[in-house]
Length: 249
Image (cartoon, rainbow, N blue to C red; front, side, top):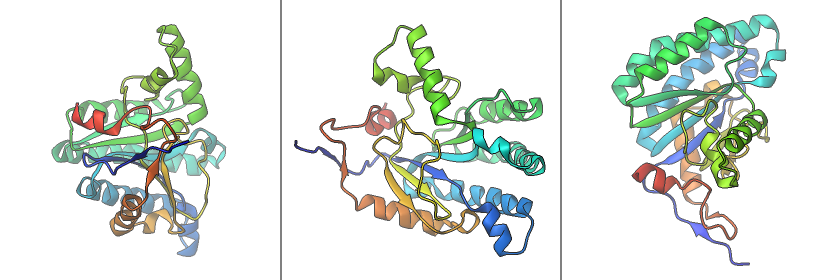
């Protein structure tokens, strides 16, 4: 079977990051785990600022999985507070810099104050065109796929390619292109229920660098390696949602 290769898209790529290692970073620096999460949140700002200049047009960050609720309540509360503070403090800057914020995942277990902050940030930045910043919160890829399949059937769009149109968490942001490059920091080498559908043909990049230490230069190095890889999609020729078509439409 002849394999079709796809050139590096000149119109921008979709990068997804599993931000792992906050707790270990805190331990290595003899800090509390809350300090590690705070350092990780600060690093989000640096990476978001650097992303457009590195050719990234969509950036999806794994902030909190559905399985993370099993962590100690104090740690969960701290993470949620940091997320709310980020949304409330960065909305204006993101609007100014052309960054559109969207939070994907279920909101059924989130406190009302956080849901309100999410909605406000999404409204405030809705016109951004420079970067799509997608934050996966209370997210499970398996749950997302099942929910998308249900919505797909109810809408009489049963073709598999249409399922991807409903994978934006609550269905409001359809057609986001598949992930081109998945990065996981912290040394682990697994997907952990993150964007399983969208990463079907993603290039994978694992680094031992802990998330708070993952710098824009590290991101640049990951993208440089990605550019030198020959991407193959079997006999399909392109992923289910073409990155080129999305950015050019």
